[in-house]
Image (tube, rainbow, N blue to C red):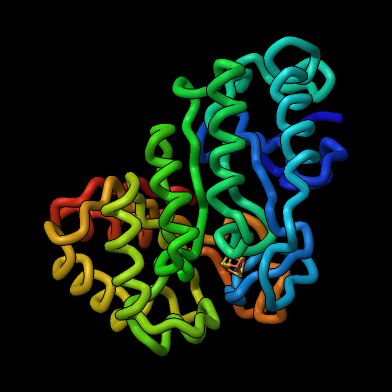
Length: 281
Ligand code: SF4
């Protein structure tokens, strides 16, 4: 099988928790860890690419299986024929990161901090960290939980980073885009906590909904919020992206990606506030 940046199937390596992705964004191999094998999340973003997404939390983790799979897969990439077997181009033959990014919200895992420690220890022992990044992709909605905070502290000890989803600074936008049952204010509180515990990047997905483009009201609300928190919340970077692949949600037909021009124009406005911004389209 050829692994390409278009192939994001979690089943590609036939493992339960570990899957390889050639990431356009990181320019190399990203080793994904999926805690949400039941496709359950506490949000329902209308651009979500999880098939059969359902409301809920990650199931109990089988730590023995996670350990076995991660050791096996890292050994396969580092010492065996993974790149040849999956016909990965020479230029992409580097482990850019291990990313906890699954089919749902990973911080909903019971014993979340134990999972972070296990992954961090194995990747360190096998020489993957600190050269490769350790990334947690999260909607940030559970950072107020003590166990999640313990996990973020651990993540920080491995030099890791949190990519914290924040798509809209209006209650209407959050409801429409994320179906988030959490107010903007509570999300901000969690963002602040996250940034105090670990390097945190804001990841913002901007989409065209029903041909409306990037609404002025959404743009202004986000800029105002970023202006307000600048200096108070230590954000490492702001990652702006738009739809890369089709959504699996019923709203898919009403969604379009935003143009590179619109994305870049907004990125420049955010940069003017003093933030480091990257754009992925
Ligand atoms: S938070 Fe992530 S997994 Fe959950 S619905 Fe949104 S995009 Fe999907």
